[in-house]
Length: 397
Ligand code: AMP
Image (cartoon, rainbow, N blue to C red):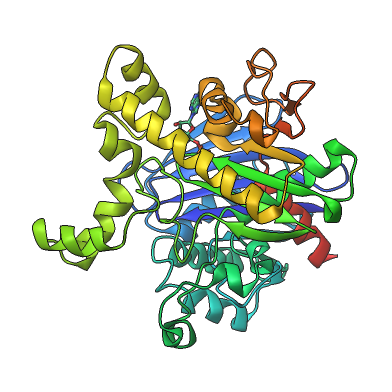
């Protein structure tokens, strides 16, 4: 069976086609600037040249129509006709408390996705738009939702509750959810395989460090704790997100900078983090370059970034009562040699010792721990699309 995996953002559609016989990727691509002048589709059929199509498209339905045309194109398509696609897997960011697993999408599932608009306003509306566009164009195949929050639904209340009046949990579902769950799921399972141990017997700390970043502590096959919370703003320092701050700063700055709640939301989500602190960029490569040429704020931002991660590692080792391995993944985790080195420096008292020579690698699945490190240190490129394809295949069968 062939599976189409779709990930819709507010103005983008990412897709991949998998052949589930051998889990190979037949094609992947991206439609960018959907609904904005200058829409462009980049299609990469495996083993063939990239195809770029520029054509303004008003909405996700038109965007998906173009994707489907490209997939069956005689010259650069990868399937003879659409009947070859057995099911479609959709990435959905927020499933609230409703979903601990992927699920076939029906009216009720769409209603839950809609109910989460309030708490995931940037992600769930375009995710649902993508689902409805695909359902309209492919009404006879199953559509499956794979939630970023699902893996973290194994967290216990003592980890997901905030110390706020209980009513706000009961009335508004204010609690910690966690995100990047599909990525944490994939790399933690791979890590268990690399250690040759059953997943249910491992203590694993996963570090998904991209433009957004989160960590998870995993034990007995379940997520014990994760750094993102009610929204993806909590936790680590990110490209443009502050991560953890004293909540009193929000009220203080709303007052001082005369911001309403929307403006404050944007301030902490889009103007803070590495961008706000360094004043250089949200991209770690630019910040490292600036720091190397003597920019002190850039160096400070990097130090704050690394220290926050270190403090989470320490706290997660305490929560897990030890740890078999830590796993680096996503843009910074897979490629940031100096970042990984800075994070693991001086953690030997926790049993974490990196082999700095082995660490000089990018984007490969590899163990970079020193021979005398009690804790294994893995770099594992994430593959959220494969998890979505597998779940979709499993449910569609
Ligand atoms: P992602 O969100 O997973 O695509 O990660 C994107 C981020 O990865 C970028 O913002 C960069 O900060 C980071 N990144 C990519 N390549 C490198 C690299 N060679 N060194 C450090 N950071 C990198």
